[in-house]
Amino acid sequence: MTFNQITARTSGPAHRDRQDKDLSPDPWEVFRALRDARACFGLKPGHIQSLQALLSFLRPGQGTTVFASNVEICRRTGGVDERTLRRHIDRFVELGFIERHNSPNGKRYRVSACDGQTLSFGLSLAPMMARAEEVLKAASDLQDTLRDQVFLRKQLLAKLAIVDTTEPDNAVAQTVRKMLRRKLSATQYQSLIDDIDTTLQQMSTAVDAVRPVHLSGNDGQIVRHLSRSEEVRKESETVADTELPNLQDLTAACSEAMVYTTAPLATWHDVERHAATLAPMMGIHRQAYEDAGRTLGSRKAAATIFILLQLSNRVRNCAAYFHSITLGRKAGQFRPWRLLARMGQQQAAVA
Image 1 (cartoon, rainbow, N blue to C red):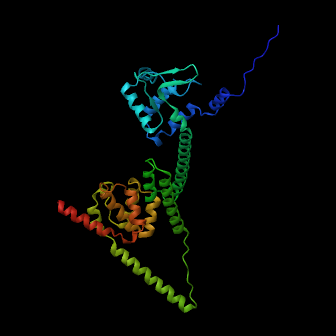
Image 2: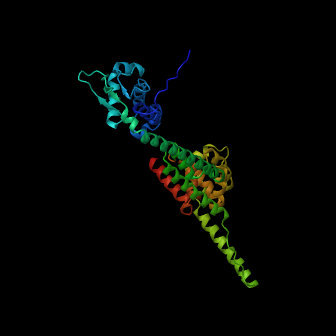
Image 3: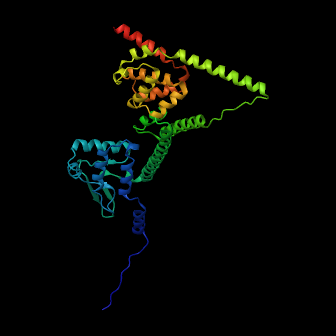
């Protein structure tokens, strides 16, 4: 017995149709891309769920038209209301992903002639397949954008860690951390990185700045230079002392600070020691308080702690405000006695 192998011809319309099917995009690949990039097209998860149900009715080699009724589609979506399904289909038609081919009686079906011609009535997904390249590109671009955002966020967090190590109570860093609670774009992340870079540069300049030393030419100039420096230092100390509030006025106006002391504050040394204890309780880092003491003077920094504690119900962030008025750009303009006088006036008006 001889078996003859029958081979189909590899040319003609049938072969070309098979090649076209092989080159056509995978419907589920397009669906996954549209699902990931749904926000770019104004789609919601409910729309994607209905589209998934429509795709489940397609069979390989049988076209891209769905003939199932709305009842069957709703059952396959897990019980979605028919009115909701119609709204979802209308949205896809509006976006140009679905075409309706309605029959005269409103049914969905396909008829074919003897010569192979077909006539289909239903929901055609051919427009979505025709826009496959657009959908895939949108999903790819969105993925790249998300990757850039994650990279910029990690870069920003690394820079914030450097700022926190050097200056834990930096006002700019605290503002940036509040911004990170929201969903930001890549441009916004880059803007915050630029702000932190500027802050780091200012901190580096302040630490590494070299003060020039001018040497005199002879012994007489050295003596005059030392004498003049001593006079300038004494004058600056006198000015600083006159700017300090009276000790009795400070303790009388700042009753909140006096609640936490177990002994009367008789001298400025007692005030400074008590302020060093209050600062950490207010969220002010010890290093920031010591820096303010070296910049403004220990008494002025201690008086500022007393005043801020008294105004704690009005100040949202004591640490940031303390840094701003003692170490910020306008630190030289801050006068605690003026704020204390205003507090005294307000207390007198209430009394």
